[in-house]
Length: 90
Image (cartoon, rainbow, N blue to C red; front, side, top):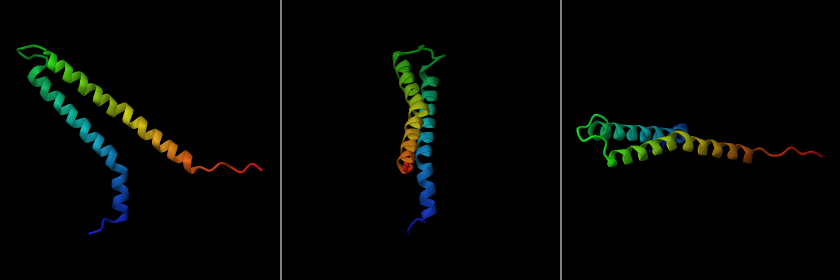
């Protein structure tokens, strides 16, 4: 069965943001679970493994929040600028 054009267009618009939200929430859940087991208030205290994981997860989450939208905005702007034709100044 062929997917209607309108559905595929909407899917293309929301696919990347939806994937980014799912990845962000998965990273949040991973850090929360690790923090509950090995983080603050743990009988063993903060371990090097938890601190390393926390730094990596926070860096990935920051990349998802800052870098990815910046790259997407850059792509949109370059696409729009490529479509704009210069005015004829004769």
